[in-house]
Length: 467
Ligand code: UD1
Ligand code: MG
Image (cartoon, rainbow, N blue to C red):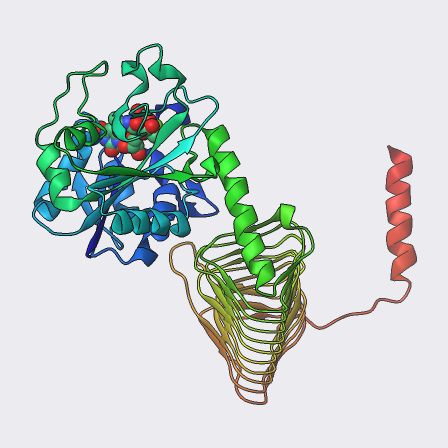
């Protein structure tokens, strides 16, 4: 049976209290991934032929997040969940199969639960199967109204439309369902906004089906946490904690060590190889991929970076960086803007690399800034060396060859080139290219003055006495 998925994500989220009035609720991130993306990632393994996301409030932001994985339709007035689903009519209405409807603000939902819901729908031959759960405090949720004796589902009653007795029902609608697709649209076309909220309720499809003798079933979810919806930032932080624990557990079970998973923040999109050890207060997000047998942390922030094997990265910030194998990085290294580090390099304390390419065996161990540069194999960059790559308007390139020696405190005023096996003397300001086998030195010659120490000292002391 063909499967389709509809993700409702048009709602406003005013309780997030953002200054940005176009910040859609479902675009808030957890570990660098937007809420709605969690829902889409959970449904993707069920291979739906079509995923359609309904956007509305702050829709431009939501659209950017989902458009690679799903079709996007707009709901311009928020007239209820039934009205929302109707916006997918043009794409889905006449197709045969089963359609799952999901909410974009429930990031904890798992593929396994969605799979079980589909299985139940298919096995029982239902026209609709509702994912329900039992809550001690069901206020706010739609209640599952069942016939007293047979327990047959009759309707979903919204909280605001329940009578006193119905308010005691503890089985609630989670807002996730699988429908026979053609019947879904048949009955959606019949719903009206005659209810307490004057909205088109998707839930009214259930009673319309029952009145037409269609079979409606439920799959009762044991762990209500999976359908925890995000409405404010306290709930956002709660869900973040749950997701962090899940991600860390999965990684640890696959062979990654974490000294303190409670202070280790890894996005679900990140891959990490076996025997890599992550030390506390480390965050790894974006499209990062880490190989095996690395030691990372403590105190690292790694984003959109690829790290090979057997590296040691300590207390460093790496953005958009690729690192090979067997490197020593940090502490207090910052790399960014497509920096590439080969193998067996040392990038050390207080070193910033920006759009720099280091070939194998390069050493840049202390207090340097290397930007817009290529550095050849086995070159040594001495302490406090700087590429002066910006003239206030333009960025220029620095090319340093193989086996070079950049003396401590060299300033390379770019554009500039050092050929292979060239040498800059410590403290030099290099403004002309250095050729193969040359030594460039630009500092004035040293003059030593006999008795100079005493002379200077006495001058300083007599100045003090006069005061
Ligand atoms: C809905 C269900 C309720 C269920 C609850 C579970 C209906 C009528 N009620 O209620 O039975 O217990 O979810 O959380 O469906 N949305 C749109 N467009 C709209 C309205 C909502 O896209 O016009 C989206 C929201 O962004 C959200 C989802 O639909 O992702 C649910 O909407 P919400 O307003 O939270 O519905 P509830 O009143 O909580
Ligand atoms: Mg809700």
